[in-house]
Length: 253
Image 1 (cartoon, rainbow, N blue to C red):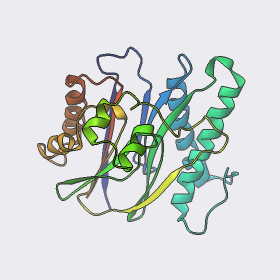
Image 2: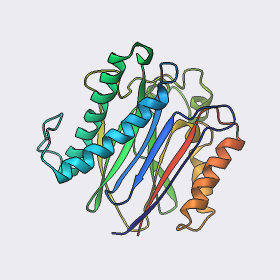
Image 3: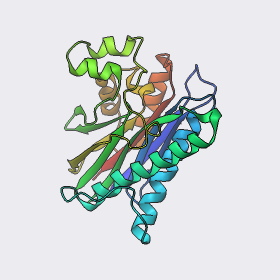
Image 4: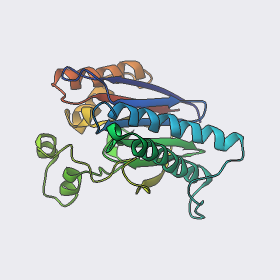
Protein backbone atom coordinates (compact mmCIF):
# COMPACT_ATOMS: atom_id res chain seq x y z
CA UNK A 1 0.00 0.00 0.00
CA UNK A 2 1.32 3.46 -0.96
CA UNK A 3 1.33 6.32 1.51
CA UNK A 4 2.07 10.03 1.53
CA UNK A 5 2.36 12.34 4.51
CA UNK A 6 2.58 15.94 5.66
CA UNK A 7 3.47 17.55 8.96
CA UNK A 8 3.53 21.08 10.33
CA UNK A 9 3.80 22.77 13.71
CA UNK A 10 3.11 26.36 14.77
CA UNK A 11 3.25 28.03 18.22
CA UNK A 12 0.12 30.05 17.52
CA UNK A 13 -0.31 33.65 18.59
CA UNK A 14 0.25 33.21 22.33
CA UNK A 15 3.50 31.25 22.48
CA UNK A 16 7.06 32.46 21.90
CA UNK A 17 8.59 28.98 21.98
CA UNK A 18 7.12 25.90 20.36
CA UNK A 19 7.36 22.85 22.66
CA UNK A 20 5.74 20.49 20.14
CA UNK A 21 7.78 18.22 17.88
CA UNK A 22 6.74 15.89 15.08
CA UNK A 23 8.19 13.35 12.69
CA UNK A 24 7.17 12.12 9.24
CA UNK A 25 9.53 9.31 8.25
CA UNK A 26 7.94 7.68 5.22
CA UNK A 27 10.96 5.42 4.64
CA UNK A 28 10.56 3.78 8.05
CA UNK A 29 6.77 4.18 8.09
CA UNK A 30 7.02 6.09 11.37
CA UNK A 31 4.97 9.14 12.37
CA UNK A 32 5.05 10.99 15.70
CA UNK A 33 3.67 14.00 17.54
CA UNK A 34 5.00 15.08 20.95
CA UNK A 35 3.91 17.95 23.20
CA UNK A 36 6.54 18.77 25.84
CA UNK A 37 5.89 20.15 29.28
CA UNK A 38 7.56 21.16 32.54
CA UNK A 39 10.81 22.57 33.86
CA UNK A 40 11.55 26.09 32.59
CA UNK A 41 12.80 25.65 29.02
CA UNK A 42 12.80 21.85 29.14
CA UNK A 43 9.47 21.05 27.52
CA UNK A 44 10.92 21.38 24.04
CA UNK A 45 13.94 19.28 25.05
CA UNK A 46 11.68 16.48 26.27
CA UNK A 47 9.57 16.42 23.11
CA UNK A 48 12.63 16.63 20.85
CA UNK A 49 14.37 13.81 22.70
CA UNK A 50 11.23 11.67 22.55
CA UNK A 51 10.90 12.01 18.78
CA UNK A 52 14.64 11.48 18.15
CA UNK A 53 14.80 8.47 20.48
CA UNK A 54 11.82 6.64 18.98
CA UNK A 55 13.16 7.16 15.47
CA UNK A 56 16.63 6.03 16.54
CA UNK A 57 15.31 2.88 18.17
CA UNK A 58 13.14 1.92 15.19
CA UNK A 59 16.01 2.36 12.74
CA UNK A 60 18.70 0.71 14.87
CA UNK A 61 16.52 -2.22 15.95
CA UNK A 62 15.85 -3.03 12.30
CA UNK A 63 19.49 -2.83 11.22
CA UNK A 64 21.52 -4.15 14.16
CA UNK A 65 21.37 -6.37 17.20
CA UNK A 66 20.58 -4.17 20.20
CA UNK A 67 19.10 -4.60 23.64
CA UNK A 68 15.38 -3.89 23.90
CA UNK A 69 14.17 -2.08 27.05
CA UNK A 70 11.11 -4.38 27.35
CA UNK A 71 10.52 -8.02 26.54
CA UNK A 72 8.63 -8.83 23.39
CA UNK A 73 5.03 -9.89 23.94
CA UNK A 74 3.76 -12.93 22.07
CA UNK A 75 0.34 -11.32 21.69
CA UNK A 76 1.81 -8.42 19.68
CA UNK A 77 3.22 -8.25 16.17
CA UNK A 78 6.90 -7.45 15.70
CA UNK A 79 6.15 -3.86 14.74
CA UNK A 80 3.82 -3.36 17.71
CA UNK A 81 6.57 -4.67 19.96
CA UNK A 82 9.07 -2.40 18.24
CA UNK A 83 6.94 0.70 18.74
CA UNK A 84 6.25 -0.15 22.37
CA UNK A 85 9.96 -0.71 23.03
CA UNK A 86 10.79 2.56 21.28
CA UNK A 87 8.47 4.41 23.66
CA UNK A 88 10.22 2.81 26.64
CA UNK A 89 13.61 3.68 25.14
CA UNK A 90 12.54 7.32 24.78
CA UNK A 91 11.10 7.36 28.30
CA UNK A 92 14.40 6.11 29.75
CA UNK A 93 16.44 8.77 27.96
CA UNK A 94 14.16 11.63 29.08
CA UNK A 95 13.99 10.35 32.66
CA UNK A 96 17.77 9.96 32.89
CA UNK A 97 18.43 13.42 31.46
CA UNK A 98 15.97 14.97 33.90
CA UNK A 99 17.62 13.15 36.82
CA UNK A 100 21.06 14.47 35.86
CA UNK A 101 20.03 18.12 35.54
CA UNK A 102 18.10 19.79 38.40
CA UNK A 103 16.84 22.53 36.07
CA UNK A 104 15.09 19.86 34.00
CA UNK A 105 13.39 18.04 36.87
CA UNK A 106 9.77 17.30 36.14
CA UNK A 107 10.04 17.64 32.40
CA UNK A 108 8.09 15.22 30.26
CA UNK A 109 6.10 15.00 27.08
CA UNK A 110 3.04 13.50 25.49
CA UNK A 111 3.76 11.18 22.59
CA UNK A 112 1.51 9.61 20.00
CA UNK A 113 3.01 7.43 17.31
CA UNK A 114 2.03 5.31 14.32
CA UNK A 115 4.21 2.66 12.69
CA UNK A 116 3.15 0.96 9.46
CA UNK A 117 2.77 -2.79 10.00
CA UNK A 118 1.80 -4.32 6.67
CA UNK A 119 -1.94 -3.77 6.23
CA UNK A 120 -2.21 -2.48 9.79
CA UNK A 121 -1.02 0.53 11.73
CA UNK A 122 0.67 -0.01 15.08
CA UNK A 123 -0.39 2.92 17.28
CA UNK A 124 0.91 3.96 20.70
CA UNK A 125 0.23 6.94 22.93
CA UNK A 126 1.03 8.44 26.31
CA UNK A 127 -0.65 11.70 27.31
CA UNK A 128 -3.27 13.65 25.40
CA UNK A 129 -1.90 14.04 21.89
CA UNK A 130 -4.32 12.24 19.59
CA UNK A 131 -4.63 10.04 16.54
CA UNK A 132 -7.78 10.19 14.40
CA UNK A 133 -8.88 8.13 11.43
CA UNK A 134 -10.94 9.64 8.63
CA UNK A 135 -12.74 6.99 6.59
CA UNK A 136 -15.81 7.37 4.36
CA UNK A 137 -16.33 10.98 5.48
CA UNK A 138 -16.38 10.04 9.16
CA UNK A 139 -13.80 11.01 11.78
CA UNK A 140 -13.00 8.66 14.66
CA UNK A 141 -10.66 9.25 17.57
CA UNK A 142 -8.55 6.09 17.96
CA UNK A 143 -6.43 7.02 20.98
CA UNK A 144 -7.63 7.91 24.48
CA UNK A 145 -6.60 11.10 26.28
CA UNK A 146 -4.60 10.48 29.45
CA UNK A 147 -5.75 13.64 31.20
CA UNK A 148 -8.05 14.75 34.01
CA UNK A 149 -10.54 16.09 31.48
CA UNK A 150 -10.27 12.98 29.30
CA UNK A 151 -11.18 10.76 32.20
CA UNK A 152 -14.16 12.95 33.05
CA UNK A 153 -15.33 12.77 29.43
CA UNK A 154 -15.15 8.96 29.44
CA UNK A 155 -17.33 8.95 32.55
CA UNK A 156 -19.87 11.16 30.77
CA UNK A 157 -19.27 14.12 33.07
CA UNK A 158 -18.15 16.56 30.34
CA UNK A 159 -19.14 17.25 26.75
CA UNK A 160 -16.49 17.92 24.10
CA UNK A 161 -17.28 21.64 24.21
CA UNK A 162 -17.06 21.73 28.02
CA UNK A 163 -13.75 19.87 27.85
CA UNK A 164 -12.25 22.48 25.51
CA UNK A 165 -13.07 25.24 28.03
CA UNK A 166 -12.30 23.32 31.23
CA UNK A 167 -9.66 24.95 33.51
CA UNK A 168 -8.00 21.55 34.09
CA UNK A 169 -7.77 20.63 30.41
CA UNK A 170 -3.94 20.67 30.47
CA UNK A 171 -3.53 18.39 33.50
CA UNK A 172 -2.16 15.03 32.38
CA UNK A 173 -2.55 11.71 34.14
CA UNK A 174 0.28 10.15 32.10
CA UNK A 175 3.38 11.56 30.41
CA UNK A 176 6.58 10.17 28.98
CA UNK A 177 9.75 10.75 31.02
CA UNK A 178 8.25 11.34 34.46
CA UNK A 179 8.37 7.71 35.72
CA UNK A 180 10.83 4.88 35.30
CA UNK A 181 8.25 2.72 33.53
CA UNK A 182 5.52 4.44 31.52
CA UNK A 183 2.04 3.09 30.95
CA UNK A 184 1.58 3.03 27.18
CA UNK A 185 -1.67 2.44 25.30
CA UNK A 186 -1.13 0.25 22.24
CA UNK A 187 -3.48 -0.36 19.33
CA UNK A 188 -3.46 -2.28 16.05
CA UNK A 189 -5.66 -0.70 13.41
CA UNK A 190 -6.49 -1.94 9.93
CA UNK A 191 -5.67 0.20 6.91
CA UNK A 192 -7.89 0.58 3.86
CA UNK A 193 -7.14 2.50 0.66
CA UNK A 194 -8.35 6.06 1.10
CA UNK A 195 -7.81 6.11 4.87
CA UNK A 196 -6.47 9.37 6.24
CA UNK A 197 -4.88 9.36 9.69
CA UNK A 198 -4.35 12.56 11.66
CA UNK A 199 -1.92 12.86 14.56
CA UNK A 200 -2.19 16.14 16.47
CA UNK A 201 -1.46 17.97 19.70
CA UNK A 202 -4.12 19.58 21.89
CA UNK A 203 -3.54 22.96 20.28
CA UNK A 204 -5.67 21.67 17.40
CA UNK A 205 -8.46 19.59 18.91
CA UNK A 206 -8.60 21.72 22.07
CA UNK A 207 -9.46 24.72 19.94
CA UNK A 208 -11.70 23.41 17.15
CA UNK A 209 -14.20 20.56 17.27
CA UNK A 210 -13.86 17.16 15.60
CA UNK A 211 -16.69 18.21 13.27
CA UNK A 212 -14.77 21.33 12.24
CA UNK A 213 -11.64 19.24 11.65
CA UNK A 214 -13.61 16.87 9.42
CA UNK A 215 -15.23 19.72 7.49
CA UNK A 216 -11.81 21.22 6.71
CA UNK A 217 -10.53 17.85 5.53
CA UNK A 218 -13.61 17.32 3.32
CA UNK A 219 -13.30 20.82 1.84
CA UNK A 220 -10.07 19.88 0.04
CA UNK A 221 -9.05 17.19 -2.39
CA UNK A 222 -7.88 14.16 -0.42
CA UNK A 223 -4.44 14.26 -2.01
CA UNK A 224 -3.89 17.89 -1.02
CA UNK A 225 -2.32 17.12 2.34
CA UNK A 226 -0.42 20.42 2.43
CA UNK A 227 -3.64 22.41 2.01
CA UNK A 228 -5.48 20.28 4.57
CA UNK A 229 -2.71 20.53 7.13
CA UNK A 230 -2.14 24.25 6.76
CA UNK A 231 -5.88 24.94 6.82
CA UNK A 232 -6.22 23.03 10.09
CA UNK A 233 -3.37 24.95 11.70
CA UNK A 234 -4.65 28.29 10.39
CA UNK A 235 -8.19 27.60 11.64
CA UNK A 236 -6.92 26.78 15.13
CA UNK A 237 -4.70 29.86 15.15
CA UNK A 238 -7.55 32.14 14.05
CA UNK A 239 -9.73 30.58 16.74
CA UNK A 240 -7.13 31.83 19.24
CA UNK A 241 -5.43 28.54 20.16
CA UNK A 242 -3.74 28.88 23.53
CA UNK A 243 -1.21 26.11 22.85
CA UNK A 244 1.17 24.97 20.13
CA UNK A 245 -0.62 23.51 17.10
CA UNK A 246 0.84 20.44 15.43
CA UNK A 247 -0.61 18.17 12.74
CA UNK A 248 0.70 15.10 10.94
CA UNK A 249 -1.37 13.61 8.11
CA UNK A 250 -0.91 10.14 6.59
CA UNK A 251 -2.88 9.14 3.49
CA UNK A 252 -2.98 5.55 2.24
CA UNK A 253 -3.94 4.66 -1.32
